[in-house]
Length: 87
Image 1 (cartoon, rainbow, N blue to C red):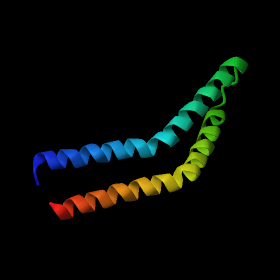
Image 2: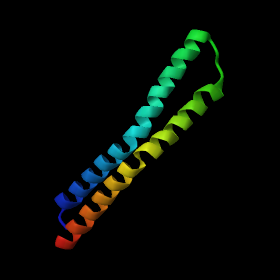
Image 3: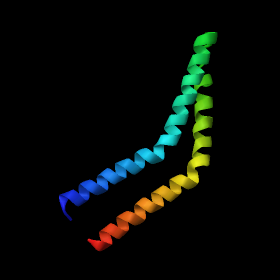
Image 4: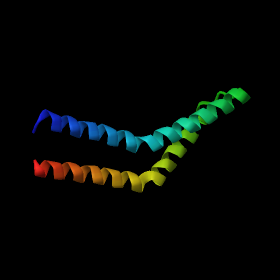
C-alpha cells in the first residue's frame, strides 16, 4: 500500500461521511433556526421547544434518507473491497 492509496481512501471516507450526515444536519439546523425565530418573536424560552422538534425532524430525515444512506455506504464499502483486492 502506498501513502497515496491510503490518503485517497481516507479522503473518500470523509467525503462519504459528510454526504451521509448532511440531510440530518441540515434538517436539524433549519428546524432549529425556525424554532429560534419563533421563540425570539414570542419571547418564549422553553428548552423542550427547541429539542423536541429537532429530534423529530432528524428522525424523519433518517427514515426518509435511510435507503439512500444504505446504498451510499454499500457502494463505498464495495469500492474499498474491490480496490484492496486489486492491490
